[in-house]
Length: 215
Image (tube, rainbow, N blue to C red; front, side, top):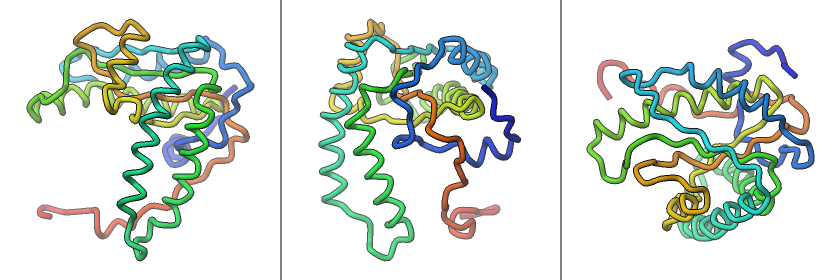
């Protein structure tokens, strides 16, 4: 299924989808492969193509990954509650909705049809800024391209990194056989969406974030 969205529509309506993931509809492997074939057309530093893409559909492995995520999310949630946004921050109302949807995803993560873990060759723990930026710049454009391709096909995704906290990345690596020297970029639910009518999100105005020639 293609939604036949324009490039601008895809770019402006690809959301982090949590509450509108269809847990009961299978995602065909062919569709995942189509999205990945587009994703790896993204630029990659020095044409290194050091990426790897792990897709998890086994129920027991999904449950184990969801448990790692839930344990870390509980700690993350507690930290967030201890450090709330100022009441006059324009993002406060939106943040409440985000937290509600994050809670929902945590409770249902094991139900998603497919989990994706993008990886990049190299150990990026405490590397110099240049090396880290180069490595992430060789993976993250492709990850975003995957999410855009998924949106055009009626799929929803959400970029989560919480499973990587507190040694969770090592637990996931052991569970999935990810070798040493490979860095995980996140844990992505992939599912068809309930409805496809996503809209642009509310964002901060350009004035405080757009700089010309100097900060």
